[in-house]
Length: 147
Image (cartoon, rainbow, N blue to C red):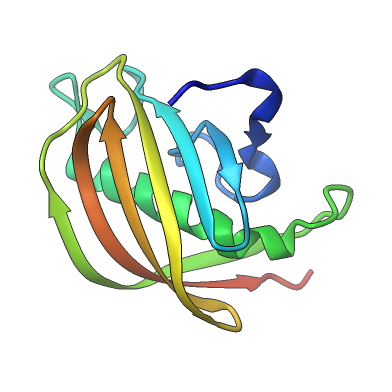
């Protein structure tokens, strides 16, 4: 996938996560039903062990990619100081095929399966070039935190 700078969406507008827990750099495409994110694995990432991005990091990247579909409804106005919290409520299925290494840039693609209010079921796959790294079906719950 060719990344065009003019198409990149700031992920900070759609996720509450910040360093060191932010596991997606950019949103490359976003609709109400799907999202594509990119993430470069850096040496100082908390999920890097022996120069590899471990399973927990891949799962967190998938969950954050998925949550930006549901999270976008909370961040429609970037001027608003909205605070949200999200939870993985269920991982229905997960398959991990390979682990990326430091310096790799992974691309995650998620599609909405179903949604009821703030609960959704999403399918996600993450790739390194054409190699499938992880495939997961995740249920998420996101809510606004009232001040």
